[in-house]
Length: 302
Image 1 (cartoon, rainbow, N blue to C red):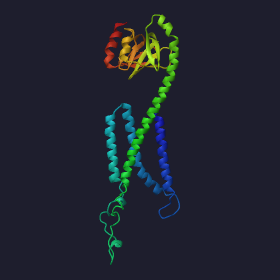
Image 2: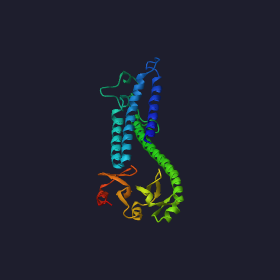
Image 3: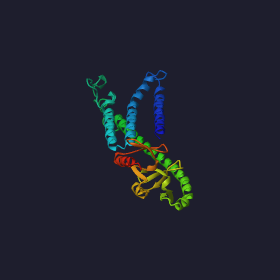
Image 4: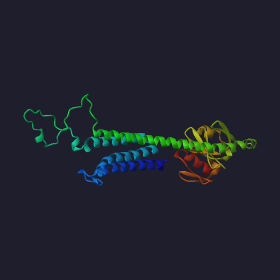
């Protein structure tokens, strides 16, 4: 998903820089001479670069904070970026011609000297408001508003892509679940008659029986669990509680080794300081909360 997002940003910003170059470069030189005006292009790019820099810094910050679930850090950095950009727009980017009055050391030129029968009008830059009291927004404020809009677009695109990726993954798991359900339903009667422990899991609108002997390990996902089963390439996703599942699994055959993992003890091939390796080659984390219980079990030699 991140690669798709980067390609979208690269295409959009390439278009922005290219269009601005074409629109400003083919206007010709200031004296009316023909030719490509690179000076105008560089001036336009100089105005675009702060907005582009703000966008890139915000995107990096948002991506990091979303990945590591740090909303407070994001809020602080976003406020710093917005404040710095506001300072740039209101002070550093102000051109002399945007000033409210004549610059320091300047005075009215000869054309402003009152002659007989003339009334001195306001100097350039000091004109009063237009009729009706409407004042146009200053260019520096427009830049600031544009920067905030781009931040909003950045966040909106991330939210849309996350939703799209979640829906795509959900449909994929749904199709995989259907095939797993069909296989499990076919073997349900056989496993129940063999005296094995069979647990019933709700997957969609169906209830699927699963033999505990087929479970290699279980992965928790908030309100759902992923059952990694023998003979199935994809896990079975079901609505179930990890604590309740551990109570219903055969005693002494399964152990919780992490907040998000329950493992079949018979499948452990090797145990490290913070991980276990299963006979299928899968490596699972072991948290400090459950490390002592696992160490005691392995030391007992059961």
